Image 1 (cartoon, rainbow, N blue to C red):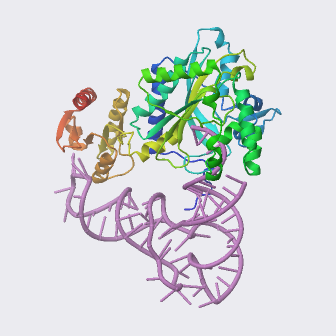
Image 2 (cartoon, rainbow, N blue to C red):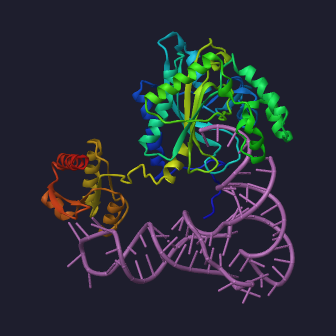
Image 3 (spheres, rainbow, N blue to C red):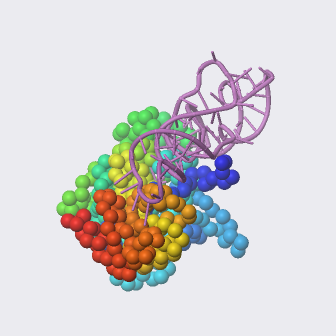
Length: 428
RNA sequence: GUGGGUGUAGCUCAGUCGGUAGAGCACUUGGUUGUGGUCCAAGGGGCCGCGGGUUCGAGUCCCGUCACUCACCCCA
């Protein structure tokens, strides 16, 4: 059975039961934002290519060599979004949300696309959950965003990760620091490729992991040591707020991000069980972004959390996030007449809010009972000619094996009651 | 984009010195009339990633290619 087609390179299919885990993870990562007053936003999967060139930055790898860009039939250059912030911010500006109450707080989820060399934890299509808080420059808001992400991870039971935090400075202090760094880098013995990178975006050389490069960078000037007074104060306030909120972090003065728009607060959540692709989420402040894409000068802060990588991290930590139960009730019909009746009963149960299924096809009793067992149902409904004559249905508790008879007429009501009772006992 | 490793059943894998393929799990059926999970038995399912080459003969050796994977890079 050789498949004619397979999922494109760098993509993968999500099927039950893993797909259920995925939904749970996305749900858990976004829940804290919903509880913090963030509204749901959905923007297009593709945007004007220029939006990403101007927003994310043409010097970044993401824009310069990883975008899925194409011309549509109208000759427009469009790009599958490589990240979420640019589109959300564009929508905020386009719809005049900055004229309303600030900050504008939005959360979103969806796929991002980057043409990268695939490896585990790195895909050409990956899903992020993100938040953006725009329009207010308040270090407490930076802390809120960070804590929201941390809360999401914790709610899944994740613990083998650290929060890395730094400040990259602002338009006032970064240029001077940049000059300092460039001068330092010029004195080093670097390969041509790294030199090129240093010329385009010197900051990115700081977190090079190659030992021969890293060793030379030991004495490099680092951003947090060259902040202006305002940035220093801002960074101190962010840390104080995180301390107040009890969120642990590690100072990571060499942390840089691949997207040009970050200013001041910058952070990354690094998981310890994932190998090279260890970043399960990251973000920071982007006070110049909105102006860069044609809006008024406006501060903003946000994050993107990798749902795919968070799934991998949960697997590494042995966390089963979803119960394997598909339905609560499973119908086992014996004969055609019984099947007609069960078809209706199961439909009524579903309408009453009970997850229910039944044995389709031509399975014998034994096979149908087996299917009931595999479905994860708590109750099996056995209906045959004998029961039909009595106007009853056999209800079997699949964990205890106890079986009782129930009047067919009010079976739905009694089953709903019975399931509510047992689930209450379980939550006690 | 650069380097290394691996591709055999749906999944995890075995397959000797080259002689046209196996296990466990999963699935289906059966173990006398209408009861699942454990057990026993049977069955279905594979162009050995794909294409070339060497050979009387290739899952096995060689080359290419594609995919996956690990590191660099990049980042979620």
